[in-house]
Image (cartoon, rainbow, N blue to C red; front, side):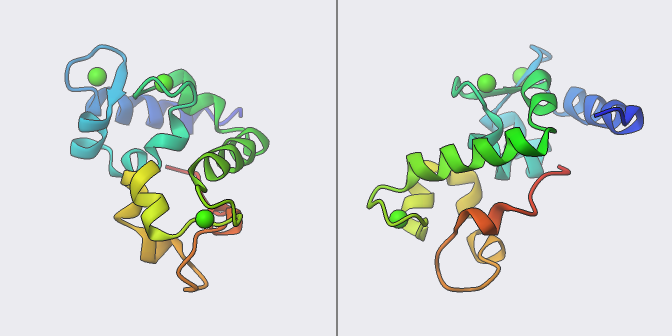
Amino acid sequence: MHDERFQAEVQQRFAAADANADGQLSREEAQAAAPRIYEHFEILDANDDGAVTLAELQQLRDPALMRQRILERVRAADRNGDGKLDLAEVQASLPGMAVHFAQLDRDHDGYLTPDDFAGMGGF
Ligand SMILES: [Ca+2]
Ligand SMILES: [Ca+2]
Ligand SMILES: [Ca+2]
């Protein structure tokens, strides 16, 4: 929370990726220049408006909030309600993450669970 160097770095990377300098990263901007943000776009876009702002990134540096947000997202994407996400569910709701499904699925059971997201962050 008080890591100023980290903050400065995030701000710098954010500004570099914000091609139209509107203070928000669209999905396209993130995909082009901020792959780590793109991968987690739907989670980082806390208000679901299709754009990630610096404020949203900073808010989710709080591990407790991040965890809560992930759980919220997993629940929303989990269409068959089995508590985990298969590739089809991820593709439908979290397209940025679908690209890295195999990597994220750390225990290789073909599903993403909240535990698979536990090490996330530090983007
Ligand atoms: Ca932008
Ligand atoms: Ca947003
Ligand atoms: Ca499911």
